[in-house]
Amino acid sequence: MLGKVEHEEERVVTNPRSGSDPAQLGPAGREESWRRFGDETFDLVVIGGGVVGAGTALDAATRGLRVALVEARDLASGTSSRSSKLFHGGLRYLEQLEFGLVREALHERELMLTKIAPHLVKPVSFLYPLTHRIWERPYTAAGLLMYDTMGGARSVPGQKHLTRAGALRMVPALKRSALIGGIRYYDAQSDDARHTMTVARTAAHYGAVVRTSTQVVGFLREADRISGVRVRDVEDGRETEIQAGAVVNCTGVWTDELQRLSGGRGRFRVRASKGVHIVVPRDRIVSESGMILRTEKSVLFVIPWRNHWIVGTTDTDWNLDLAHPAATKHDIDYLLEHVNSVLATPLTHDDIEGVYAGLRPLLAGESEETSKLSREHAVARVAPGLVAIAGGKYTTYRVMAADAVDAAVVDLPGRPPSSITDKVPLLGADGYHALVNQADHLAAEHGLHPYRVRHLLDRYGSLVHEVLALAADRPELLKPIESAPDYLGVEVVYAASHEGALHLEDVLARRTRISIEYAHRGVDCAEQVAQLVAGVLGWSEEETKREVEVYRARVEAERDSQLQPTDESADALRAAAPEARAGLIEPVS
Image (tube, rainbow, N blue to C red; front, side):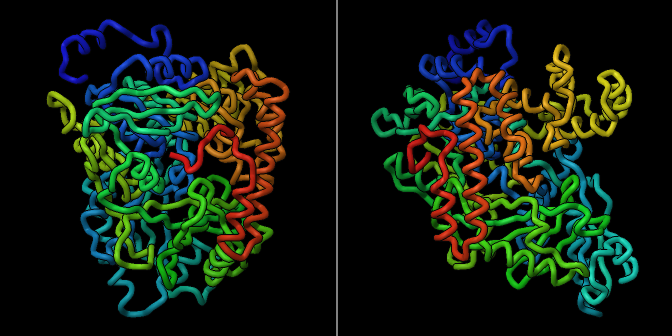
């Protein structure tokens, strides 16, 4: 492990994937990764392919540690693909006097916008409608002044005060009676699933061995310490052991399950809070800006999302299936009721294109109301060789990852360097700004509209050349997907060849966001996309047909669950749908 001369020498001489890019999470690398799991000893095994797990792998790899990252399902398949898709400080945390959390989050937002992921994280404006005279404007302005300054250097505009007429010009969709004025402020947003996947690929680029569909089914022990994990390939049922100096549990809402599997007691408990979002077409809300609205429990966001709006979120306790939280009719009605209270033309169920539900991993507290639980994170060395991290929020994943590695290296020989991920751009960031300026030339070179190239740049950054190269001998891949024209065929192929997608659901729900951006939820293009993926992953005709059937069953189950009145009835319908990864052992690790 770390500190042993022979291992340091081996690292220099041996390139385990000689001749290939380690950040290419394609089918060719899966067998090699499996071999390495059984043959090598790692400094850290990271369990969980959400943003915290991916961030932990990147942090450790860039410190020079040998890292294995395993995920039972797909990268970002849990909470990290179902967030509000914001990098933000959290205005409401100011009211809860959590100044440290807000300052930390705003600092991270600034890093993402300027250095780490400018291709993936973009500024987004919000209108805060004022409804009370005299006191509310100075009170809110004071909070926003802190918000504008707490994060240090600022790459987004500061607050702007508006009269009622000015606010209505910015957001004509609002009822005149819904406000007396407004304040516009800025935050940032990102495609959470794409960002998480890019963090994982960046970790692989720096040497981490990243493998999905790889479930932890047991822990290895030497005397009183954890010395690794036993994993199962859920695609074919094989099992192997991974030896490691320490194991980091980054499984979010599954933290307690992993803790039970390890046979020890945890230092904290995690509660799952369900957050539901709906997606509606952009033309249903006429506005130049997003909105943040107060509710009796928390806040409601109306977030611009390409040609859509995302409206969310709810905040309710969830004690059912952790893998597939189900949205109910009650959840959707709640969102419609609150957003319609301020809209001149109300939204209806027929306007909804997509619905998604995610689970926040909140540290269990004394309050019974999940919206009041702290979003601070906790790290614990729960046993020699085993560290767990939970809580926190998407925006602060990098800080959480650094804390997790700091706790884990106690069990390793030698003294590894401190975290440097504040200086490490994600793949695609380098050269992005220059390519934006060259978008017209790039478009002409490939026969694409400049708008399309800018869209690709905001998804892949400077990796766009790698994406478009796949169409060099197959120009038909530069055509849009027939029933999902926001995406090109080449993006589907790239998802399977470079981004680790193993199933149709991985492509439609996470590598693209077709499952929430189109009213058909991906059903209408499932066959076309499956055929493109089949060519990369070598699916037989029978396997391709099964992938389409499983995906359609998933969508049907989700639609049916969204008509149910309770969590229990919705969960029963959603849980009955077949699992794309049929080899998973429940409860999942």
